[in-house]
Length: 136
Image 1: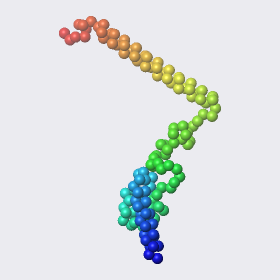
Image 2 (image 1 turned 180 degrees about the vertical axis):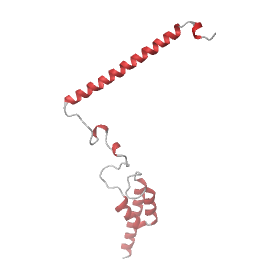
Image 3 (image 1 turned 180 degrees about the horizontal axis):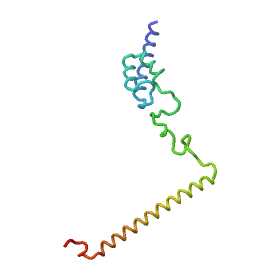
Image 4 (image 1 turned 45 degrees about the vertical axis):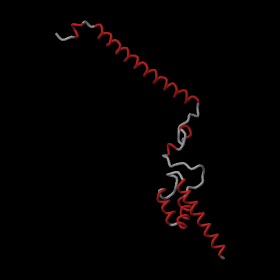
């Protein structure tokens, strides 16, 4: 009987130590129901009950590698995001690419026109006679 009590006590001590280490090493944000600090205090102060509560209600479920909580948009790579429009028809892609090219050409033409106007204004300023630009 004494041996069984000692073994049970060691088992509970091992469970308590495991849960303390598990709470500490769990990445912040993946634990369930309470903040990490609260779980640590519960496991430390309530030993056996806190350890069982951590395993049942706080420990993250093993559904894959533990990841911190992130917004929905950051969970997926750009091209694997659910609901993302992906062209299934090559004609749709071609139309989109034509639209992008036309927009780039228009931006390039506007830049060239603005740059030529700036260069002309600079040339005019440099060629102006000194007496025109200086007060009397």
